[in-house]
Image 1 (cartoon, helix red, strand yellow):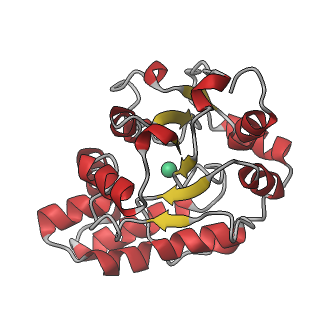
Image 2: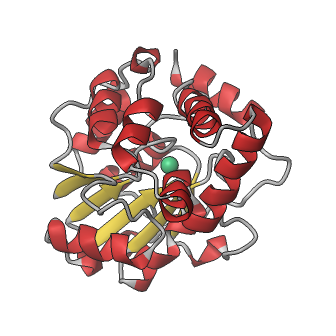
Length: 250
Ligand SMILES: [Mg+2]
């Protein structure tokens, strides 16, 4: 699917309220040597039928696990997501659930619905410095997503939910573990995320923050001021191309 068709599909999903984009001055990125990216709905657009599959499998798992109907399971899923950062964390905290079984089940999806994105691959490869994935999902899921997007070998490391001892973004401990584990100096790092709620803890540690506003994940919207982010963007590849082109602003 071409980028323009993809973008017009995405625009159909947009919430009525438009968020003004925000550019980042070139000099703000001068010292950046580590480029950190969220995975789901960041490296691929929310119109890709990936996260919907995960969402449905989470509901099915919770319905079975809590022996309840789908409507109630969905309510629990979303309540825990808002309260704990991930539905998984809520199930672990409130029901003592083991993480691995849940992760294996919810990520057992058809990743082949993603197609290679050579423009994104080229833009990422042009970034100077290390490229990292920081996800609340599993490493196995991340590897499949990257493979299907044609991004094998593009990233230097994946920091997943297991590496974070199942403590997800936006909990402070997760960022501390990520920075330590991957030896990242936060003042030299930029973090790109579609979930607004996951950006303030990164900013608090000195990272530059970029909100990819795709209107899918609204958690944090209305709670945090998006203008506190260093940049607000609506297309990752376009932004990366501007960054590496050394334009006047990013
Ligand atoms: Mg995401």
